[in-house]
Length: 326
Image (cartoon, rainbow, N blue to C red; front, top):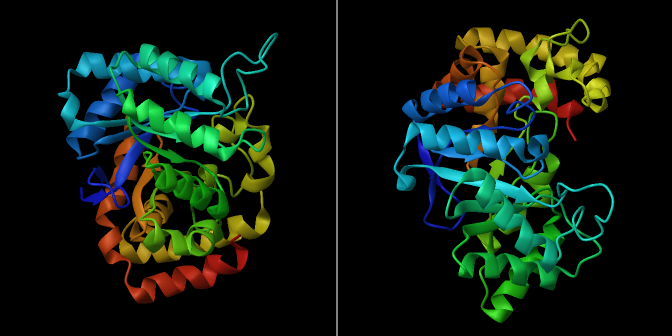
């Protein structure tokens, strides 16, 4: 496993990391989480991604319990969480959901620390932009979180380049802690934000990336070529919004073509797709997910494929997928 700096910071994260969206609590209990986190750690993974909203806070509890059981030295791993959606979405939830105001953020970090059972969280993200709160208020609140020792670095997720730059400039002007990283979706069919919209930010402000969904929610595994299997993520309750993507005929046909490229490299399409995302030097870490140990082990084997992605191979991949990418 190789390690890359998180943007312009001095923190180094594994080029492949392990996330908990959908899986923890819903598909993965504490025992399975402990087993997979231990296997990932043994393979060199040092970054574990989470969010307040995943499984209504239960994902943080599962990961925190696994970390306590594994008894890793705190310096040896990096944990993240993300704030925006909130947990209390009923009743008097005015300042408790879909916001990045100071009141919500000050409560959110304390809640996450309690669920994790940690004294601080390494990376905290603004999970989505909040058009109703001034960016300046959010920047001050996130910077204060770090000043108080409750987090070490902060960043954004699915923000526009303009808003990221505005946040950075506010922090620069007031001598506050600046946003260090962004967490965007990035895969073979979703490229433009990372490759075009953010292009100036990498050099101008030193933006780092921890990207999610390298397998396009499972589309790039090839398992959806004949519809949605009953035991797949696409068939899970609450995941119906993925159906249109997963059953896209043109993209599934492209995945079938990628099988030939993967076969020539001696890997699976999933491994090819993960390696492709990690091949981008602007990406600090590619967040992978898994619901069982064998799946995790297969995903992490993508680290060995990265070096095989020569310019010629990348050109073949582009020929198949670029016309369908957004």
